[in-house]
Amino acid sequence: EVVRAQAFKRPKWASVALFFFAMGILEKIKDIEDEISRTQKNKATEGHLGLLKGKLARYRSQLLEGDAGGGGGKGAGFEAAKSGDARVSMVGFPSAGKSTLLNKLTKTESATGAYEFTTLTCIPGVIEYKGTEIQLLDLPGIIEGAAEGKGRGKQVIATARTSDLILIVIDAGQAERQRPLLEYELEILGIRLNKPRPNIYLKKKPSSSMNVINYTATVKTTHLNEKLCKDILHGYKIHNAEILIREDATVDDFIDVVEGNRQYLPALYIYNKVDTITIEEVDRLARLPHSLVISCQWDLNLDLVVEQIWEELELVRVYTKKKGNPPEFEKPFIMRKGDTVEDLCKRLHQDFLNKFKYAMIWGTSAKHCPQRVGKDHPLDDEDVLQIMTQTAAQDKNQIDARTARDLKKRAQAAKKK
Image 1 (cartoon, helix red, strand yellow):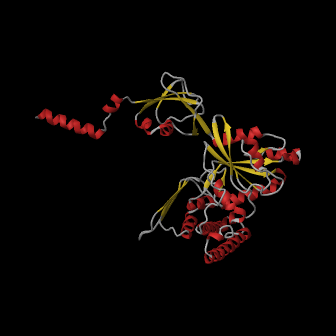
Image 2 (image 1 turned 180 degrees about the vertical axis):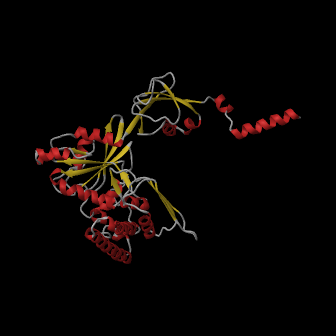
Image 3 (image 1 turned 120 degrees about the vertical axis):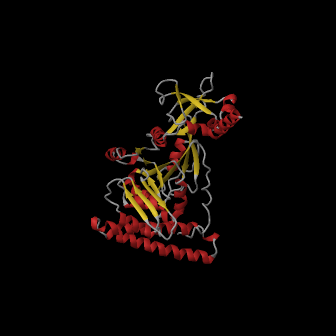
């Protein structure tokens, strides 16, 4: 399955070599997973399990690198250009209702049917909401074993990695089976859903004659210790590094930091076809975190999907105004939560940042309206900003400290003469 999709682009000997390489790695992965499941989880086996998890992560990385190294690209239908203010990808099993949901939320027409694999390519659409344009991608349905290359699953998940938000579309009648399988496939390929990035600092250094791994923990750790961290790094052939643990992280968190290629993305679970299950089951699914229950056939809760997408993306609209003119409410700048006045200046033009004097702001981020602020002021949704720049005369009079010292020395020397 790993080589069939792209075998025609490789020489015959390369395809055969890749096939045996992948089969050997898959067998090793299965053996490690079986050993992990057989091992009892307690204090005495934490170190052994940590080493097994590190070895498992290395084999999975080798499998992905071996498949990527053979060439072949992303394949036809997966070249959707990124557009709009944010990107949202829909991931799910076949016949979960992704194409129908795309047709309901956007003006795009995606083929729908009562059979599986109706969508075979990546189909983009645009959601227009509150002055923003959100790109919504309808990806082909994935199957069990997608992380190993089955059914173009790697291409689908690779496209999902480029998103700002992932919609996990699930058939409500099969929720107990589909949700854990989808989470497992995404986790194998390095996507962490609704999880903050571990507060761990790791600096890898080149090997030298004085190799040493410095381990420091600022908090009490219950899962990690110095010996376990060093053993995991030695498995990656890292013998010179600095480790700083700032939270009670797990072994999996530390391995993710060592790998360095994990994507931490917000996710929203969409349970479709709730018209086919009992009201008690609908109530249970609706109370789960980051979850919405909908019915595309009944147009149930479709407006809540768009509102929840907006909240999860944490977008901020900022309006600008010129001195003596009203704000330009028709053309907001779409920023991210936590962005500052400096970030908006960079969006406008570099000259606004170089000649920045101060800014006047109206809105919820201001203590009083208007408030005079600097470049570090954080922006809130629907703030109005007026940027004041230096005039030509003020810009000419601005000199750096070194030039000022030189001028002062010249003036003192001329005075002595």
